[in-house]
Image 1 (cartoon, one colour):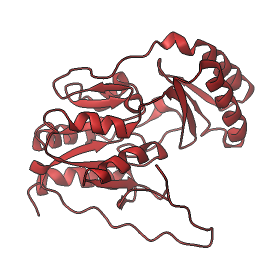
Image 2 (spheres, one colour):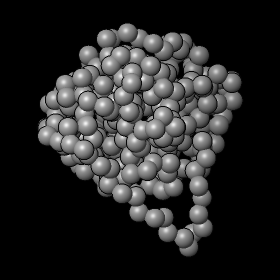
Image 3 (cartoon, rainbow, N blue to C red):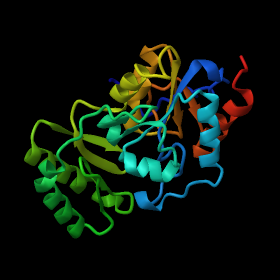
Image 4 (cartoon, rainbow, N blue to C red):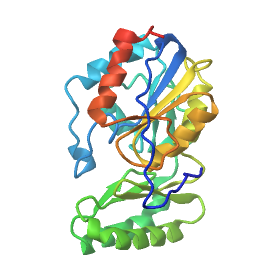
Amino acid sequence: MILAETGQSELFLPLPTPPRAKAATIALFVDIDGTLVDFAARPDGVVVDDSLRPMLREVRTRLGGALAAVSGRPLREIDALLELSSSAAAGLHGAQLRTADGTILAVMHDASQLDPARELAASMAAAHPGVLVEDKGAAIALHYRMAPAAANDVARAALEMLHTVGPNYELLHGNHVIELKPAQTNKGTALTALMATSPFIGRTPWMIGDDLTDEDAFERANELGGVSVIVGPRRPTLAHYALTNPAAARAWIASLIEHGDAA
Protein backbone atom coordinates (compact mmCIF):
# COMPACT_ATOMS: atom_id res chain seq x y z
CA MET A 1 0.00 0.00 0.00
CA ILE A 2 1.49 3.34 -1.08
CA LEU A 3 -0.09 6.71 -0.39
CA ALA A 4 0.80 9.52 -2.75
CA GLU A 5 2.79 12.29 -1.10
CA THR A 6 2.66 15.96 -1.99
CA GLY A 7 4.80 18.94 -1.13
CA GLN A 8 3.71 21.15 1.77
CA SER A 9 2.76 23.94 -0.62
CA GLU A 10 0.43 21.72 -2.62
CA LEU A 11 -3.27 21.31 -1.85
CA PHE A 12 -5.13 18.04 -2.09
CA LEU A 13 -8.02 18.10 -4.51
CA PRO A 14 -11.31 17.83 -2.62
CA LEU A 15 -12.93 14.42 -2.74
CA PRO A 16 -16.60 14.18 -3.75
CA THR A 17 -19.38 13.03 -1.44
CA PRO A 18 -20.22 9.37 -2.07
CA PRO A 19 -23.23 8.78 -4.32
CA ARG A 20 -26.39 6.99 -3.33
CA ALA A 21 -26.29 3.22 -3.59
CA LYS A 22 -28.65 0.37 -4.40
CA ALA A 23 -28.89 -1.58 -1.17
CA ALA A 24 -29.44 -4.87 -2.97
CA THR A 25 -26.03 -4.61 -4.65
CA ILE A 26 -23.63 -3.43 -1.96
CA ALA A 27 -21.70 -4.91 0.94
CA LEU A 28 -21.06 -2.26 3.58
CA PHE A 29 -17.92 -2.31 5.73
CA VAL A 30 -17.65 0.36 8.44
CA ASP A 31 -14.99 1.39 10.90
CA ILE A 32 -16.20 2.56 14.33
CA ASP A 33 -13.95 5.11 16.09
CA GLY A 34 -13.72 8.34 14.13
CA THR A 35 -16.24 6.97 11.62
CA LEU A 36 -19.46 5.99 13.38
CA VAL A 37 -18.57 7.68 16.67
CA ASP A 38 -16.35 10.63 17.54
CA PHE A 39 -12.98 9.96 19.15
CA ALA A 40 -12.78 10.24 22.93
CA ALA A 41 -9.79 10.78 25.19
CA ARG A 42 -10.09 7.12 26.18
CA PRO A 43 -11.44 4.24 24.05
CA ASP A 44 -13.95 3.39 26.79
CA GLY A 45 -15.20 6.98 26.80
CA VAL A 46 -16.79 7.11 23.34
CA VAL A 47 -20.41 8.25 23.16
CA VAL A 48 -22.75 6.25 20.93
CA ASP A 49 -25.43 8.43 19.36
CA ASP A 50 -28.91 7.30 20.42
CA SER A 51 -29.96 6.76 16.81
CA LEU A 52 -26.94 4.68 15.77
CA ARG A 53 -27.85 1.20 16.98
CA PRO A 54 -31.45 1.06 15.66
CA MET A 55 -30.29 2.66 12.42
CA LEU A 56 -27.60 0.02 11.90
CA ARG A 57 -30.11 -2.75 12.53
CA GLU A 58 -32.42 -1.29 9.88
CA VAL A 59 -29.55 -0.88 7.42
CA ARG A 60 -28.43 -4.46 8.05
CA THR A 61 -31.93 -5.64 7.15
CA ARG A 62 -31.99 -3.40 4.08
CA LEU A 63 -28.65 -4.89 2.98
CA GLY A 64 -29.80 -8.46 3.50
CA GLY A 65 -27.23 -8.86 6.26
CA ALA A 66 -24.26 -7.60 4.19
CA LEU A 67 -23.05 -5.20 6.88
CA ALA A 68 -19.83 -5.62 8.85
CA ALA A 69 -18.09 -3.46 11.43
CA VAL A 70 -14.33 -3.52 10.74
CA SER A 71 -12.43 -2.19 13.73
CA GLY A 72 -9.26 -2.28 15.74
CA ARG A 73 -11.41 -3.07 18.77
CA PRO A 74 -11.88 -6.73 19.77
CA LEU A 75 -15.17 -8.37 18.82
CA ARG A 76 -16.49 -8.20 22.38
CA GLU A 77 -16.19 -4.39 22.36
CA ILE A 78 -17.68 -4.07 18.87
CA ASP A 79 -20.70 -6.04 20.06
CA ALA A 80 -21.04 -3.99 23.25
CA LEU A 81 -20.88 -0.69 21.38
CA LEU A 82 -23.09 -1.49 18.39
CA GLU A 83 -25.29 -4.28 19.78
CA LEU A 84 -24.98 -6.19 16.49
CA SER A 85 -23.65 -9.47 17.87
CA SER A 86 -25.47 -11.49 15.22
CA SER A 87 -23.71 -9.60 12.40
CA ALA A 88 -20.49 -10.18 10.51
CA ALA A 89 -17.56 -8.28 12.00
CA ALA A 90 -13.78 -7.98 12.00
CA GLY A 91 -11.99 -7.19 15.24
CA LEU A 92 -8.35 -6.40 16.02
CA HIS A 93 -7.81 -5.17 12.45
CA GLY A 94 -8.81 -8.54 11.00
CA ALA A 95 -7.13 -10.83 13.52
CA GLN A 96 -10.65 -11.72 14.66
CA LEU A 97 -13.28 -12.51 12.02
CA ARG A 98 -16.92 -13.49 12.35
CA THR A 99 -19.27 -14.24 9.45
CA ALA A 100 -22.93 -13.27 9.29
CA ASP A 101 -23.99 -16.71 10.54
CA GLY A 102 -21.75 -16.44 13.60
CA THR A 103 -18.88 -18.60 12.35
CA ILE A 104 -15.46 -17.54 13.65
CA LEU A 105 -12.95 -17.60 10.76
CA ALA A 106 -9.73 -16.13 12.13
CA VAL A 107 -7.36 -18.07 14.35
CA MET A 108 -7.13 -16.58 17.82
CA HIS A 109 -3.64 -15.69 19.00
CA ASP A 110 -2.12 -16.67 22.33
CA ALA A 111 -2.33 -13.52 24.43
CA SER A 112 0.47 -14.71 26.73
CA GLN A 113 2.98 -14.21 23.92
CA LEU A 114 2.64 -10.47 24.54
CA ASP A 115 3.50 -10.62 28.26
CA PRO A 116 7.01 -9.12 27.80
CA ALA A 117 5.51 -6.29 25.75
CA ARG A 118 2.87 -5.69 28.43
CA GLU A 119 5.58 -5.02 30.99
CA LEU A 120 7.24 -2.50 28.69
CA ALA A 121 3.92 -0.82 27.93
CA ALA A 122 3.10 -0.50 31.63
CA SER A 123 6.50 1.08 32.30
CA MET A 124 5.99 3.49 29.42
CA ALA A 125 2.60 4.62 30.71
CA ALA A 126 3.90 5.00 34.27
CA ALA A 127 6.68 7.29 33.06
CA HIS A 128 4.44 9.43 30.83
CA PRO A 129 1.22 10.68 32.41
CA GLY A 130 -1.57 10.74 29.83
CA VAL A 131 -0.28 7.75 27.86
CA LEU A 132 -2.87 4.99 27.98
CA VAL A 133 -2.26 1.26 27.53
CA GLU A 134 -5.16 -0.58 25.91
CA ASP A 135 -4.68 -4.33 26.37
CA LYS A 136 -6.82 -6.15 23.80
CA GLY A 137 -5.52 -9.60 24.66
CA ALA A 138 -3.98 -10.45 21.29
CA ALA A 139 -2.88 -6.84 20.71
CA ILE A 140 -1.66 -3.90 22.78
CA ALA A 141 -2.26 -0.25 21.88
CA LEU A 142 -0.40 2.77 23.24
CA HIS A 143 -2.67 5.84 23.09
CA TYR A 144 -1.11 9.28 23.43
CA ARG A 145 -4.08 11.55 22.59
CA MET A 146 -3.85 13.02 26.09
CA ALA A 147 -0.04 13.29 25.90
CA PRO A 148 0.85 14.38 22.33
CA ALA A 149 4.30 15.56 23.42
CA ALA A 150 5.17 11.95 24.22
CA ALA A 151 4.72 10.82 20.59
CA ASN A 152 8.42 10.11 19.98
CA ASP A 153 8.85 8.28 23.27
CA VAL A 154 5.76 6.20 22.51
CA ALA A 155 7.19 5.31 19.10
CA ARG A 156 10.47 4.18 20.65
CA ALA A 157 8.67 2.13 23.29
CA ALA A 158 6.50 0.50 20.62
CA LEU A 159 9.59 -0.53 18.67
CA GLU A 160 11.09 -2.05 21.82
CA MET A 161 7.84 -3.93 22.42
CA LEU A 162 7.97 -5.27 18.88
CA HIS A 163 11.54 -6.48 19.30
CA THR A 164 10.59 -8.43 22.43
CA VAL A 165 7.85 -10.47 20.72
CA GLY A 166 9.38 -11.24 17.34
CA PRO A 167 8.29 -11.53 13.70
CA ASN A 168 4.74 -12.77 14.29
CA TYR A 169 3.72 -9.25 15.27
CA GLU A 170 3.89 -5.81 13.69
CA LEU A 171 3.26 -2.16 14.57
CA LEU A 172 0.26 -0.30 13.24
CA HIS A 173 0.17 3.50 13.46
CA GLY A 174 -3.17 5.28 13.84
CA ASN A 175 -4.64 8.53 15.11
CA HIS A 176 -2.60 9.23 18.28
CA VAL A 177 -2.06 5.51 18.79
CA ILE A 178 0.53 2.86 17.97
CA GLU A 179 -0.60 -0.74 18.20
CA LEU A 180 1.32 -3.98 18.48
CA LYS A 181 -0.81 -6.53 16.63
CA PRO A 182 -0.56 -9.93 14.94
CA ALA A 183 1.16 -9.75 11.56
CA GLN A 184 -0.32 -10.84 8.23
CA THR A 185 -3.77 -9.44 9.03
CA ASN A 186 -5.29 -6.03 8.38
CA LYS A 187 -8.64 -4.53 7.45
CA GLY A 188 -7.96 -5.29 3.80
CA THR A 189 -7.50 -9.01 4.45
CA ALA A 190 -10.63 -8.90 6.62
CA LEU A 191 -12.68 -7.33 3.83
CA THR A 192 -11.38 -9.92 1.35
CA ALA A 193 -12.25 -12.83 3.65
CA LEU A 194 -15.76 -11.60 4.40
CA MET A 195 -16.46 -10.89 0.71
CA ALA A 196 -16.08 -14.65 0.13
CA THR A 197 -18.89 -15.44 2.58
CA SER A 198 -22.67 -15.14 2.43
CA PRO A 199 -24.40 -12.67 2.08
CA PHE A 200 -21.44 -10.60 0.81
CA ILE A 201 -20.68 -12.80 -2.21
CA GLY A 202 -21.42 -11.09 -5.53
CA ARG A 203 -21.97 -7.66 -4.00
CA THR A 204 -19.90 -4.49 -4.44
CA PRO A 205 -17.79 -3.62 -1.37
CA TRP A 206 -18.14 -0.18 0.17
CA MET A 207 -15.59 0.69 2.87
CA ILE A 208 -16.05 3.71 5.15
CA GLY A 209 -13.27 4.65 7.57
CA ASP A 210 -11.16 7.52 8.83
CA ASP A 211 -7.72 6.36 9.92
CA LEU A 212 -4.46 5.12 8.43
CA THR A 213 -5.55 1.70 9.65
CA ASP A 214 -8.41 1.81 7.12
CA GLU A 215 -6.21 2.37 4.08
CA ASP A 216 -5.65 -1.37 3.43
CA ALA A 217 -9.41 -1.81 3.24
CA PHE A 218 -9.77 1.23 0.96
CA GLU A 219 -7.16 -0.29 -1.32
CA ARG A 220 -8.87 -3.68 -1.40
CA ALA A 221 -12.33 -2.21 -2.00
CA ASN A 222 -10.91 -0.23 -4.93
CA GLU A 223 -9.26 -3.35 -6.36
CA LEU A 224 -12.57 -5.19 -6.21
CA GLY A 225 -14.33 -2.43 -8.14
CA GLY A 226 -15.94 -1.06 -5.02
CA VAL A 227 -16.19 2.30 -3.27
CA SER A 228 -13.90 3.79 -0.62
CA VAL A 229 -14.99 6.67 1.63
CA ILE A 230 -12.81 8.54 4.10
CA VAL A 231 -14.37 10.34 7.06
CA GLY A 232 -12.65 13.56 8.11
CA PRO A 233 -9.82 15.70 6.72
CA ARG A 234 -6.87 13.28 6.82
CA ARG A 235 -4.92 13.21 3.54
CA PRO A 236 -3.33 11.65 1.52
CA THR A 237 -5.67 8.69 1.18
CA LEU A 238 -6.55 5.92 -1.23
CA ALA A 239 -10.24 6.66 -0.70
CA HIS A 240 -12.16 8.02 -3.67
CA TYR A 241 -14.90 9.82 -1.72
CA ALA A 242 -15.13 11.76 1.54
CA LEU A 243 -17.55 12.66 4.33
CA THR A 244 -16.75 15.47 6.72
CA ASN A 245 -17.25 13.80 10.11
CA PRO A 246 -18.95 10.88 11.92
CA ALA A 247 -22.30 12.71 11.93
CA ALA A 248 -22.13 12.95 8.13
CA ALA A 249 -21.13 9.27 7.92
CA ARG A 250 -24.11 8.25 10.06
CA ALA A 251 -26.43 10.37 7.91
CA TRP A 252 -25.12 8.82 4.69
CA ILE A 253 -25.48 5.27 6.05
CA ALA A 254 -29.00 6.08 7.27
CA SER A 255 -29.87 7.26 3.76
CA LEU A 256 -29.59 3.64 2.59
CA ILE A 257 -32.84 2.96 4.44
CA GLU A 258 -34.72 5.63 2.50
CA HIS A 259 -32.79 5.70 -0.77
CA GLY A 260 -31.40 2.19 -0.99
CA ASP A 261 -32.96 1.51 -4.39
CA ALA A 262 -31.97 4.85 -5.88
CA ALA A 263 -29.68 4.93 -8.89
